Image 1 (cartoon, rainbow, N blue to C red):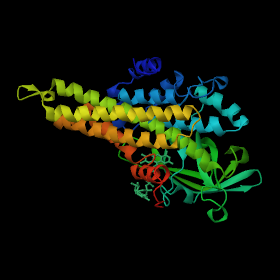
Image 2 (cartoon, helix red, strand yellow):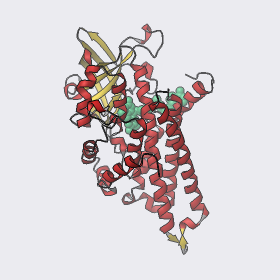
Image 3 (cartoon, rainbow, N blue to C red):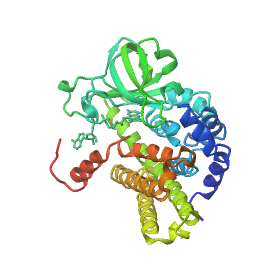
Image 4 (cartoon, rainbow, N blue to C red):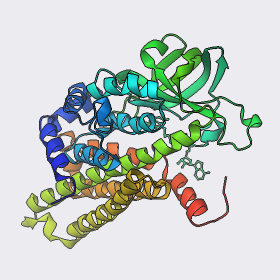
Length: 382
Ligand SMILES: Cc1cc2nc3c(=O)[nH]c(=O)nc-3n(C[C@H](O)[C@H](O)[C@H](O)COP(=O)(O)OP(=O)(O)OC[C@H]3O[C@@H](n4cnc5c(N)ncnc54)[C@H](O)[C@@H]3O)c2cc1C
């Protein structure tokens, strides 16, 4: 039996109502899987990480990772909901008592959604400490100016965690200091200092450019202490990377099962194509790589849930799992031959979806540079 079998069975039962045809339809319409997200919320899975005293189930990153893995393993796309999972970890760990009292019960009940996190900027990219979006304190308000890019699910969220500079880079001792995070009420912000422009993109992933022009935020929207936002965000990013690793494991298992089943059925030259070692070996190899990546995903989950710094494991899990799912996607497409390109087989959709994780939420090169510098002690490259 697999770990967390009860959660797996519960999520699978829900996902059975949202089959391949459902996800294909959402993809073709470039729509949002509203019915699925609502059902996942109502069943309590999206608030599972919220402590029980606020109406959640008080589960950890391990359980959250299983929920997202299963969504992808069933053929769905958990990129439509994962934001709420990792953002909740940030709010639960670093939010004030008043923020938790106000928001967590509403997030647990589904009255509110916290699906968005605004970090990336168009002119600074991965070089996060150089972000140009500023939040300047004026009396009982912070005034935000700047721009973000690739900020997802803004149109299907009520709240967003925003990273902005509160002390200019030139005035801080270390470049990681002087940034802060805010809980932005999108319902109040959009049209009052914040503008949203959708970005058409390769996957059906609702993502946007954001423009801030004197957006006013009440001081109590600050999460934690002013100037320490980068540290809080990094903590959340380790959760995010681990969750994405689990999603990739789910994708990888979906691709391998599809490839295995098709290779057993498809007859060419009077025998199943899977009888040829040229077809079966790549599937076997992809399976080995997914299973190996899964071990690192569990190491990251256990460290994070145990309160141990999970930076190294989370990064390595994301690297291995994204690579393994992409290899599995490629093998699955190749196994299907021409039919892999037909939308009704869902392989091309999942192929596009899993490709994203080589780039977001952190690109492969940046993980390699983290490992080279922080784990191997090689000279800093930037
Ligand atoms: C669909 C989608 C959804 C997203 N959702 C969100 C979101 O909700 N919130 C959010 O904040 N961001 C989001 N992102 C942004 C994502 O996190 C970034 O795209 C990603 O971190 C890479 O940043 P960049 O695109 O600016 O690439 P760049 O930083 O411009 O890098 C471009 C390429 O150069 C490489 N590179 C850059 N510097 C180096 C170096 N020093 N050494 C080696 N290689 C280097 C990178 O690895 C990359 O391959 C999303 C992106 C996409 C595509």
